[in-house]
Image (cartoon, rainbow, N blue to C red; front, side):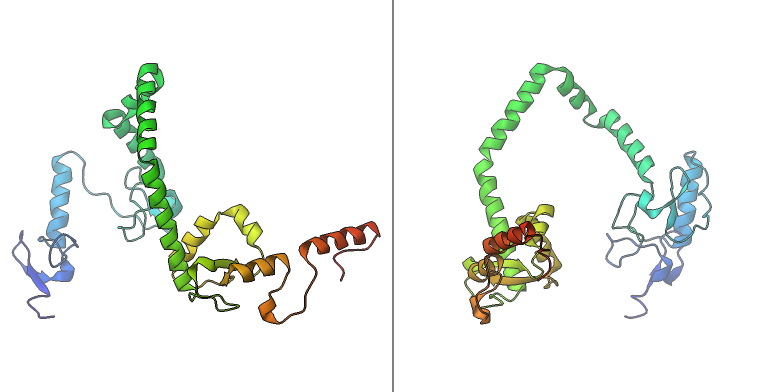
Length: 261
Protein backbone atom coordinates (compact mmCIF):
# COMPACT_ATOMS: atom_id res chain seq x y z
CA UNK A 1 0.00 0.00 0.00
CA UNK A 2 1.30 3.47 -0.90
CA UNK A 3 1.94 6.12 1.74
CA UNK A 4 -0.81 8.23 0.20
CA UNK A 5 -3.29 5.42 0.65
CA UNK A 6 -2.23 4.80 4.26
CA UNK A 7 -2.69 8.45 5.30
CA UNK A 8 -5.66 10.80 5.47
CA UNK A 9 -6.28 14.43 6.34
CA UNK A 10 -8.63 15.07 9.23
CA UNK A 11 -11.65 17.10 8.17
CA UNK A 12 -11.74 18.88 11.55
CA UNK A 13 -8.17 19.82 12.45
CA UNK A 14 -6.68 19.52 8.94
CA UNK A 15 -3.71 17.41 10.05
CA UNK A 16 -2.60 14.51 7.86
CA UNK A 17 -2.37 11.35 9.96
CA UNK A 18 -2.06 7.60 9.53
CA UNK A 19 -5.29 5.65 9.01
CA UNK A 20 -4.81 3.95 12.38
CA UNK A 21 -5.41 7.37 14.01
CA UNK A 22 -8.96 7.45 12.68
CA UNK A 23 -11.95 5.54 14.11
CA UNK A 24 -13.34 2.76 11.95
CA UNK A 25 -16.39 3.36 9.76
CA UNK A 26 -17.52 0.52 7.48
CA UNK A 27 -19.62 2.75 5.24
CA UNK A 28 -16.60 4.62 3.82
CA UNK A 29 -14.35 3.36 1.04
CA UNK A 30 -11.17 3.29 3.15
CA UNK A 31 -13.02 1.99 6.21
CA UNK A 32 -12.25 4.94 8.55
CA UNK A 33 -14.00 8.14 9.66
CA UNK A 34 -13.25 11.59 8.24
CA UNK A 35 -12.32 12.93 11.70
CA UNK A 36 -9.31 11.69 13.64
CA UNK A 37 -9.73 10.04 17.04
CA UNK A 38 -8.85 13.20 19.00
CA UNK A 39 -11.32 15.36 17.10
CA UNK A 40 -13.91 12.59 17.22
CA UNK A 41 -13.55 12.32 21.00
CA UNK A 42 -13.68 16.08 21.47
CA UNK A 43 -16.79 16.29 19.29
CA UNK A 44 -18.67 13.75 21.38
CA UNK A 45 -17.57 15.37 24.64
CA UNK A 46 -18.88 18.72 23.41
CA UNK A 47 -22.10 17.03 22.35
CA UNK A 48 -22.60 15.54 25.82
CA UNK A 49 -21.93 18.86 27.53
CA UNK A 50 -24.25 20.69 25.12
CA UNK A 51 -27.21 18.37 25.61
CA UNK A 52 -26.80 17.82 29.35
CA UNK A 53 -25.33 14.32 29.39
CA UNK A 54 -22.12 15.52 30.99
CA UNK A 55 -18.57 14.47 30.15
CA UNK A 56 -17.73 10.95 29.10
CA UNK A 57 -17.52 8.45 31.94
CA UNK A 58 -13.94 7.49 32.85
CA UNK A 59 -12.97 3.93 31.98
CA UNK A 60 -12.70 1.68 35.03
CA UNK A 61 -10.45 -1.40 34.72
CA UNK A 62 -12.52 -4.59 34.90
CA UNK A 63 -11.33 -8.21 35.18
CA UNK A 64 -11.25 -10.55 32.23
CA UNK A 65 -14.68 -11.86 31.26
CA UNK A 66 -16.51 -8.85 32.75
CA UNK A 67 -17.80 -5.58 31.33
CA UNK A 68 -19.25 -2.34 32.64
CA UNK A 69 -22.78 -1.54 31.53
CA UNK A 70 -22.84 1.81 29.74
CA UNK A 71 -26.34 2.50 31.09
CA UNK A 72 -26.32 1.57 34.80
CA UNK A 73 -22.53 1.52 35.27
CA UNK A 74 -22.51 -1.87 37.04
CA UNK A 75 -19.70 -4.34 36.31
CA UNK A 76 -21.25 -7.63 35.20
CA UNK A 77 -20.02 -10.83 33.51
CA UNK A 78 -20.30 -11.05 29.73
CA UNK A 79 -23.16 -13.54 30.12
CA UNK A 80 -25.24 -10.68 31.57
CA UNK A 81 -25.14 -8.78 28.25
CA UNK A 82 -27.12 -9.54 25.06
CA UNK A 83 -25.09 -10.84 22.15
CA UNK A 84 -24.03 -8.46 19.38
CA UNK A 85 -21.61 -9.78 16.77
CA UNK A 86 -20.64 -6.35 15.47
CA UNK A 87 -18.87 -5.47 18.72
CA UNK A 88 -15.35 -6.60 19.61
CA UNK A 89 -16.38 -8.76 22.57
CA UNK A 90 -19.51 -10.05 20.87
CA UNK A 91 -21.90 -8.48 23.40
CA UNK A 92 -23.83 -5.21 23.61
CA UNK A 93 -22.78 -2.26 25.77
CA UNK A 94 -26.08 -2.35 27.70
CA UNK A 95 -26.72 -5.20 30.15
CA UNK A 96 -29.76 -7.44 29.74
CA UNK A 97 -31.69 -5.69 32.52
CA UNK A 98 -31.20 -2.23 31.01
CA UNK A 99 -31.90 -3.60 27.56
CA UNK A 100 -35.14 -5.18 28.75
CA UNK A 101 -36.21 -1.95 30.48
CA UNK A 102 -35.50 0.11 27.35
CA UNK A 103 -37.43 -2.36 25.20
CA UNK A 104 -40.42 -2.18 27.55
CA UNK A 105 -40.45 1.61 27.43
CA UNK A 106 -40.22 1.57 23.65
CA UNK A 107 -43.12 -0.90 23.41
CA UNK A 108 -45.30 1.33 25.56
CA UNK A 109 -44.33 4.48 23.69
CA UNK A 110 -44.42 3.42 20.01
CA UNK A 111 -44.60 -0.38 19.89
CA UNK A 112 -47.53 -2.78 19.70
CA UNK A 113 -48.50 -2.69 23.37
CA UNK A 114 -51.80 -0.97 22.51
CA UNK A 115 -52.52 -3.62 19.89
CA UNK A 116 -51.93 -6.45 22.38
CA UNK A 117 -54.10 -4.75 24.99
CA UNK A 118 -56.93 -4.36 22.47
CA UNK A 119 -56.50 -8.00 21.41
CA UNK A 120 -56.95 -9.14 25.00
CA UNK A 121 -59.86 -6.83 25.88
CA UNK A 122 -61.90 -6.62 22.64
CA UNK A 123 -63.53 -9.98 21.64
CA UNK A 124 -64.61 -8.73 18.22
CA UNK A 125 -61.12 -7.50 17.38
CA UNK A 126 -59.64 -10.79 18.59
CA UNK A 127 -62.05 -12.79 16.42
CA UNK A 128 -61.21 -10.65 13.40
CA UNK A 129 -57.46 -11.09 13.89
CA UNK A 130 -57.79 -14.85 14.42
CA UNK A 131 -59.91 -15.20 11.27
CA UNK A 132 -57.28 -13.35 9.24
CA UNK A 133 -54.52 -15.55 10.65
CA UNK A 134 -56.43 -18.72 9.76
CA UNK A 135 -57.12 -17.42 6.26
CA UNK A 136 -53.45 -16.63 5.62
CA UNK A 137 -52.36 -19.93 7.11
CA UNK A 138 -54.65 -21.95 4.80
CA UNK A 139 -53.78 -19.75 1.85
CA UNK A 140 -50.05 -20.38 2.11
CA UNK A 141 -50.22 -23.89 3.58
CA UNK A 142 -49.50 -25.77 0.35
CA UNK A 143 -46.78 -23.32 -0.65
CA UNK A 144 -45.08 -23.61 2.75
CA UNK A 145 -45.24 -27.40 2.72
CA UNK A 146 -43.61 -27.51 -0.73
CA UNK A 147 -40.96 -25.00 0.34
CA UNK A 148 -40.19 -26.91 3.56
CA UNK A 149 -40.03 -30.22 1.68
CA UNK A 150 -37.55 -28.77 -0.83
CA UNK A 151 -35.48 -27.21 1.97
CA UNK A 152 -35.19 -30.52 3.82
CA UNK A 153 -34.33 -32.27 0.56
CA UNK A 154 -31.50 -29.82 -0.15
CA UNK A 155 -30.14 -30.25 3.39
CA UNK A 156 -30.11 -34.03 3.03
CA UNK A 157 -28.31 -33.80 -0.33
CA UNK A 158 -25.69 -31.57 1.30
CA UNK A 159 -25.17 -34.10 4.12
CA UNK A 160 -24.86 -36.96 1.61
CA UNK A 161 -22.20 -35.00 -0.29
CA UNK A 162 -20.29 -34.24 2.93
CA UNK A 163 -20.17 -37.93 3.93
CA UNK A 164 -18.88 -39.19 0.58
CA UNK A 165 -22.09 -39.78 -1.38
CA UNK A 166 -22.06 -43.58 -1.02
CA UNK A 167 -22.82 -46.30 1.51
CA UNK A 168 -19.86 -46.98 3.79
CA UNK A 169 -20.70 -50.71 3.74
CA UNK A 170 -21.76 -51.76 0.23
CA UNK A 171 -20.89 -48.64 -1.80
CA UNK A 172 -24.45 -47.84 -2.92
CA UNK A 173 -24.58 -44.37 -4.54
CA UNK A 174 -28.32 -43.88 -5.19
CA UNK A 175 -29.29 -40.93 -3.00
CA UNK A 176 -32.82 -42.32 -2.53
CA UNK A 177 -31.37 -45.28 -0.56
CA UNK A 178 -28.86 -43.41 1.63
CA UNK A 179 -29.34 -42.21 5.22
CA UNK A 180 -27.23 -41.25 8.23
CA UNK A 181 -26.32 -44.01 10.68
CA UNK A 182 -25.08 -43.69 14.28
CA UNK A 183 -21.90 -45.73 14.57
CA UNK A 184 -22.35 -46.10 18.34
CA UNK A 185 -25.83 -47.60 17.95
CA UNK A 186 -27.49 -44.80 19.94
CA UNK A 187 -29.87 -43.62 17.23
CA UNK A 188 -33.03 -44.25 19.29
CA UNK A 189 -31.61 -42.27 22.20
CA UNK A 190 -30.57 -39.42 19.90
CA UNK A 191 -34.05 -39.23 18.33
CA UNK A 192 -35.56 -38.58 21.76
CA UNK A 193 -33.43 -35.43 21.96
CA UNK A 194 -33.93 -34.19 18.38
CA UNK A 195 -35.73 -35.26 15.22
CA UNK A 196 -34.13 -36.21 11.92
CA UNK A 197 -34.59 -32.72 10.47
CA UNK A 198 -32.60 -31.18 13.31
CA UNK A 199 -29.94 -33.89 12.99
CA UNK A 200 -29.44 -33.32 9.26
CA UNK A 201 -29.44 -29.54 9.76
CA UNK A 202 -26.65 -29.75 12.36
CA UNK A 203 -24.62 -32.16 10.23
CA UNK A 204 -24.94 -29.85 7.21
CA UNK A 205 -24.00 -26.83 9.31
CA UNK A 206 -20.81 -28.56 10.49
CA UNK A 207 -19.61 -28.73 6.88
CA UNK A 208 -17.40 -31.78 7.51
CA UNK A 209 -17.87 -35.40 8.64
CA UNK A 210 -18.36 -35.67 12.38
CA UNK A 211 -17.25 -38.54 14.58
CA UNK A 212 -20.06 -40.97 15.40
CA UNK A 213 -21.92 -40.73 12.08
CA UNK A 214 -21.62 -42.44 8.72
CA UNK A 215 -23.62 -42.94 5.53
CA UNK A 216 -25.41 -46.25 4.98
CA UNK A 217 -28.08 -47.47 2.59
CA UNK A 218 -31.41 -48.60 4.04
CA UNK A 219 -30.57 -52.30 3.58
CA UNK A 220 -27.30 -52.12 5.51
CA UNK A 221 -28.76 -49.80 8.12
CA UNK A 222 -31.84 -51.95 8.70
CA UNK A 223 -29.83 -55.16 8.80
CA UNK A 224 -27.48 -53.78 11.43
CA UNK A 225 -30.34 -52.45 13.54
CA UNK A 226 -32.56 -55.54 13.31
CA UNK A 227 -30.07 -58.41 13.05
CA UNK A 228 -27.00 -56.83 14.59
CA UNK A 229 -24.81 -57.36 11.53
CA UNK A 230 -24.73 -56.79 7.76
CA UNK A 231 -24.30 -59.63 5.21
CA UNK A 232 -21.73 -57.54 3.37
CA UNK A 233 -19.37 -57.91 6.34
CA UNK A 234 -19.10 -61.65 5.80
CA UNK A 235 -20.14 -62.42 9.38
CA UNK A 236 -22.22 -65.43 10.37
CA UNK A 237 -25.87 -65.02 11.12
CA UNK A 238 -26.55 -63.79 14.63
CA UNK A 239 -29.74 -63.95 16.74
CA UNK A 240 -32.37 -61.36 15.91
CA UNK A 241 -33.45 -58.67 18.39
CA UNK A 242 -36.61 -60.65 19.22
CA UNK A 243 -34.60 -63.80 19.90
CA UNK A 244 -32.21 -61.83 22.10
CA UNK A 245 -35.10 -60.42 24.14
CA UNK A 246 -36.71 -63.85 24.56
CA UNK A 247 -33.39 -65.33 25.62
CA UNK A 248 -32.85 -62.47 28.09
CA UNK A 249 -36.27 -63.06 29.68
CA UNK A 250 -35.58 -66.78 29.85
CA UNK A 251 -32.24 -66.18 31.57
CA UNK A 252 -33.87 -63.71 33.98
CA UNK A 253 -36.58 -66.28 34.85
CA UNK A 254 -33.93 -68.92 35.46
CA UNK A 255 -32.06 -66.61 37.81
CA UNK A 256 -29.22 -65.88 35.40
CA UNK A 257 -27.76 -62.48 34.78
CA UNK A 258 -28.56 -61.60 31.13
CA UNK A 259 -25.67 -59.12 31.04
CA UNK A 260 -23.16 -61.93 31.50
CA UNK A 261 -22.39 -63.62 28.18
